[in-house]
Length: 280
Image 1: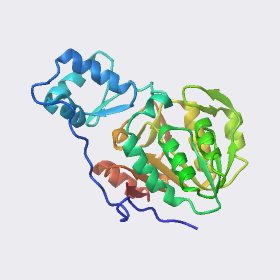
Image 2: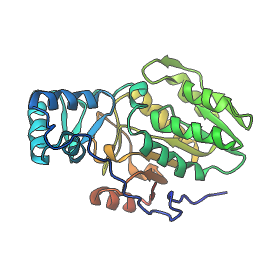
Image 3: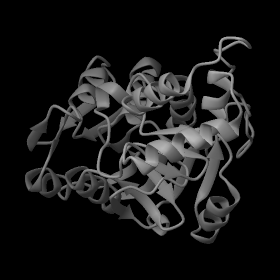
Image 4: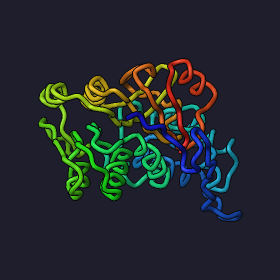
């Protein structure tokens, strides 16, 4: 049974529009070197940062932050992105580092994405920080399902539920991602059919989903190839972020679950690709 996704407010596609508050007060503004240190530090746990968020947190203007990012970019320490900055194109923080970033946003995304799972479904879940929140939600709600995953932490979360049958993929273990990867993993996934597959990645652009690790990209492709419904979960910090590799074109997705409305260029591209987009 196909289940329609709804936002947390109960209306499909509706935005909540929550905004993080500033942590710096007037008079507590940071000097340039400290701002630079904090920007780089932020990118060690989150693949992208937004200019507006940094300006509010630092108690400075957006123009000041833009100059900071331009300076860091000229030194090769960050990549300039649409509305912010990203870690260098070939690097992604570990899943442990990513688990500490955008927690509230990812929890909202998981709360919406889980609505696509019907009792008895076969579900594929990719290893990752956002998908980890989905696994926690499935276990907490006691949903009856068979879950095929390459993520060790995801398997552990779901293994605690008596209602979930967990099938763990074989493969070469990556401590960086807390999952298994490689040809054995892809071949194993090819043995199964799934009602729905869930994944995330480091970025999304008009040209498609982007990521850093080629091994991880192949797992995402393999899962989506075997699933009837293909749900991509991503927070707003990754909008218009172009990383090393194109994982798949937008046309390979059926659903997109986000925490904030897409910028105009992405919204138009997603609509043209026939994707159903829901804002958590």
